Image (cartoon, rainbow, N blue to C red):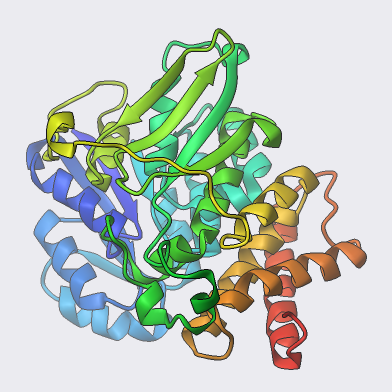
Length: 391
């Protein structure tokens, strides 16, 4: 029986992971489930699966969590320290699906134990890719990508020599605003940007999809995980979300990974790795699909993609600053304090300022440096937005 923990259990990735675990209850022992404000969902899942411990990130929600778990035998805890303690509990496989930079520290802690880390928290690689991958190597741990695009690349590369790879292309749906006139994007609301044509995701990641900040993050992830230089990594708009990634080799051959837009595919691949097992996902029927369309992204519509290449070229702490500024910009947009089209210029301004102040250099990266850069970038983004100097 495999011991598993799910960090970010109440989000869409976590819930899809639990769906797969429920389908084979005798194969897994659930060690830890963690979540945020949705304490009712967290407690219900912990009870149903007999978890050892349930942890909420919010300390003020601990009494509510304890009450919900009363009599169940499931321990309750709260706060950043409790998340780290949960990561220290022995487990064979850990899903890292906490949203945002908050997922970095628990993921790093889990790697200390040489476990298999299924990585859905893209911020970990964007903010601290060299640190995370070095820790995995040092501890003999395995990191498996769970983003659908990176899982697709990982699968296309099985048995292949990275020296034979010429280019990696990850696909993008283009988000919910992809067909809007360019001049109309200024007026897009969070509700409009938070609707996706293909994927069922959380609100924040859906808005990031509309702005392509999500894809910008995934370009950086590709660079950090697979080690290819920035000029050999790109993205293409693919409205159907059937082809998830393509790997082109030096002999001209291209391997493409195709599948229905269902995150249980990538999650199930990581959960069952190195084997393949049946999954409750729709089987692809190309005749029914009918057509697959592709087009180059318009960088005027998606300026976040330019920023991704800037971050990859800069290296160091640029990824941590980029992610923090992006998260702050998203908060400001959701709160109605900036426009949809203000987000990318705001992030660019933050990168400019921190680069001018020599805050992005890092000969040796540490968690403290990443966290400090995160705080400075968030503060800078809020200050710039308040001054209205980002446009």
